[in-house]
Length: 177
Image (tube, rainbow, N blue to C red):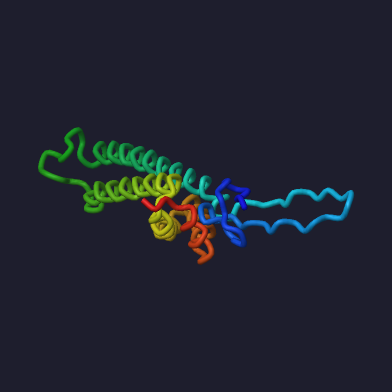
């Protein structure tokens, strides 16, 4: 038998393709004379159907976070320097701004790291790395707190990758390397 989804050779009596995880349709019984049956409609498994979209959305979310964080950093920094410190980055007598302004570099660094993780997750899903599913689930849970885009992406990620049946499907199509 041959898998209709990927063209891989499947052992007789197998229900799922060992390469892509698609369900194998049983051969139709002998039709009566003059009857031409329609070929069976076989769809791709849920994970395989949504994996390309999910990887692309994670990459787009990562780019969005990088651009938004850098833009926010430059605008915030320009306003803070002008308002609190005049023309000098550290003021004439050391740092003279409010104390919360001291943690801005830390927040920007964390945002850029999370954006890089989102890009890495998207790339890993697109290349079907075996560990990308777990990374996407963890980042999907963290993205739930980034309303509204992160929340939508987190829900979609968990809907596609979190069920136990998704683990079996993903392992069947994942790159073992």
